[in-house]
Image 1 (cartoon, helix red, strand yellow):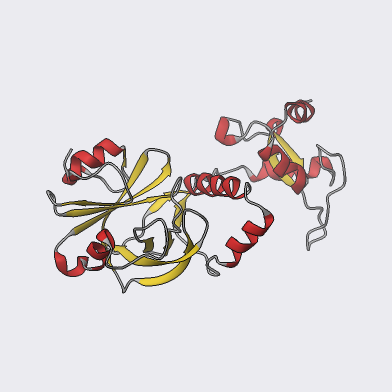
Image 2: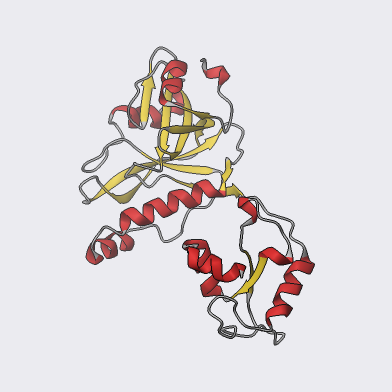
Length: 267
């Protein structure tokens, strides 16, 4: 595989990257003298760094796992001088372990800046952040499901920390979250199925059998229509596969999908 063979949004393994760029198989910043490139990897699965998009700008954290980072240290210096040193910078993201999504060639779009992030021992330190943009200024688009999986994984990892550790980390987090464009699959549901299901239950949740928790501005009870066999799993958009649930029960079905609840809703 050659660099020219890489496709935007393409998914590759580590061997593919090494073969294309003739670079090291490890690290988030991989310099190759043979191809005059610098490969950057934002690993959202394992990395301790807070690499984040803000629109079409990737704020990428520099090299160095412990202590304050230096702008003159190894590939931090290479990246900071990339506008003048002729090194071509290519960017990958990891949302699933060992799967690298190619986001294209990038350029330094502004001056590197410093911020506080925790090191691998959990100690606060100063890091360098490099604002990067694709060479065509476009914004990478990824499936929303990838972002959701990554976020849930990070929440699960954070839940293992103590309350004091969580408070400390949260107090040092960025107050304005990053943003990026994500795609999602939307099903064109039949409005007649929705209306029929809501009218049929007369304001009572079909799982907990309690009245709707509140009424909408127009006075109608607030319930949500749920497909017992979800559309994403091949379920049909029919009145036989639709039930009306309160928000709590609806979330419970998506989170747990208990067999006992499924049996009750299919009776």
